[in-house]
Length: 223
Ligand SMILES: [Zn+2]
Image 1 (tube, rainbow, N blue to C red):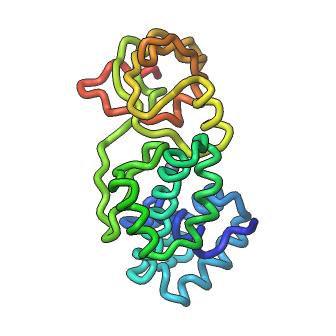
Image 2 (image 1 turned 90 degrees about the vertical axis):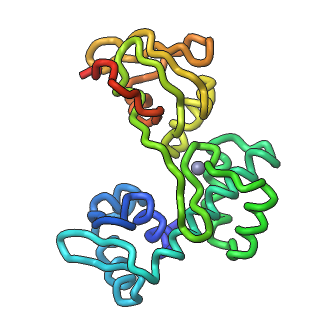
């Protein structure tokens, strides 16, 4: 499916387009489309007043685009909670179908869903769910790959890429799990972890897409 304006709004939100400029390249990567089509659609969205677009610099959400973007992200994440909690979906399945449902969700349905689920603060992958007014509560995190041997933290969020989510779920990775780095192989080799009492190996690449609570005072960086 070709991404539409709503996908662009959501991509801008996720890439920091509330506060600053997001480059076309970042958007193209996020949506997996060509830079040429990004430029074309952003031009249209600028004329519609949804975004501010600065040629060669990037774009950010305009006042009119912000509530639309918030609502899409909110709907997406609430549906994910529903699909996993009530219908037994896996991480990747929930993400996939939430992509469809988010485009057909009225603010009323969103609010009822929120109420039904008892106002969850996070989606099943650990991303904060914005309130209807756009407020989010979020704690600072860092990639697991940055932790040194001996560092202890908790898993807070995983990047929502299909293969990664399946890989992590097969390895028993869960949001909230305590994690201790037992060993990190040289040259960005796999990390050996104690994950909630179980010993698990995770590739360095995957560990870069898992976010944990920031470790204060810092174990040594692995690099
Ligand atoms: Zn999610």
